[in-house]
Length: 104
Image (cartoon, rainbow, N blue to C red):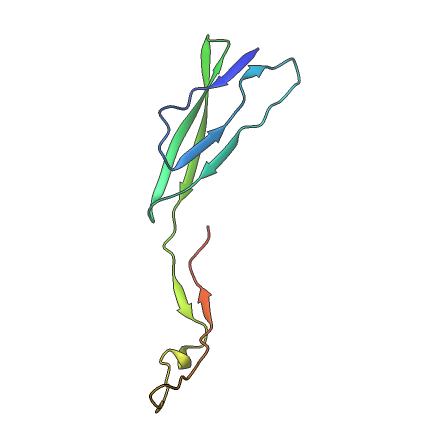
């Protein structure tokens, strides 16, 4: 059985790496699918795989882009105070931030 991916109609948020070729009985092949959302929203697409040029098998794909959030790890340090600093001198403070966006 000869299989190939027919992916020109996929959205730019999906990239598919699939090497077309002949599959013998009980043989398998991997398709590497990369999802790169561009917005915080739900996405859906179908990956068509053509078999022997006679019919197409579809693989449904779904994903969700999440809103990225960054927060100060210690809310009491949300304001950084430098106090009085003389001209030509410097003052350094460290603020720890944490990624707080949801991963689904």
